[in-house]
Image 1 (cartoon, helix red, strand yellow):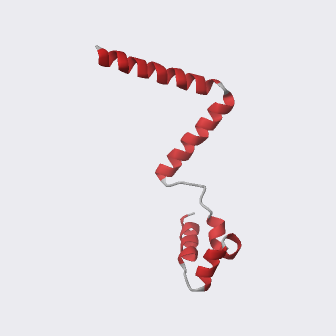
Image 2 (cartoon, rainbow, N blue to C red):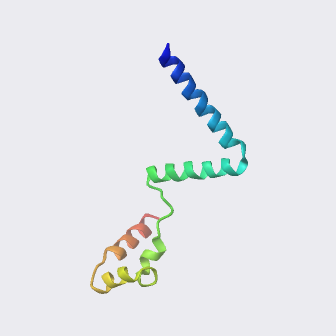
Image 3 (spheres, rainbow, N blue to C red):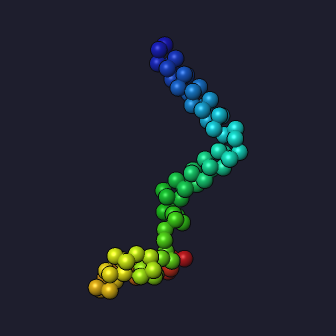
Length: 86
């Protein structure tokens, strides 16, 4: 009996909180964007990766450009792989 009461209370509180958050259109859009970002991150379709900056490391990060100058090809290889996937 107590478990049912606690579970019902938690479900009701969750529904009330969800209703409150989704009433405002701005909040609803923010929630949609967050859900979309989470789905994309699980699917591996994360569009927030700095692909273009990876091709130009000297413009993006001085430490990274030093590594490239020293012979590191990780950034260049990553950039090429991402371009091939598109």
